[in-house]
Amino acid sequence: VTDRRRRWVDVLRCLEPEQQVALCQLLGYANVIDTTRPSMHYKLRMWRQDEYDVAWTLYQLSLTQSKPCFFNLCIDGIPRRVAQTGGNMWFVLCGNAPDTAVPKNSLEFDFVWPPEVEALG
Image (cartoon, rainbow, N blue to C red; front, side):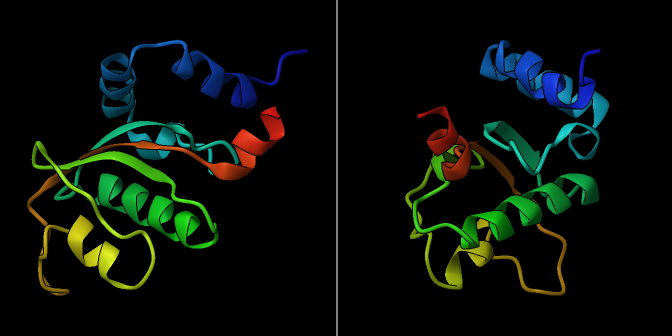
């Protein structure tokens, strides 16, 4: 018997980053993200509620780690270096939008989940 949920992440990782993005956007990131194995390439449109929620989930996961999780971060296509500690990161990920406003930016990044990397040895 094959555990489809576990293997789905493996299938995604066999794809090129842009193929991962295309498939995840087609199916909806919320339908494919596995929070126990979230390492993947992401391109999130923050004005879409489902993709905003995925960004929030990944951000919350990153706060539990002592090592950085966000790599190769681009906001609206512009490479950005952001301190991954402290409370300012979420504000930057939202394109500096006020709390009451819907962000209008896009994010592209590689998310690397340290517990998953450690499990691989």
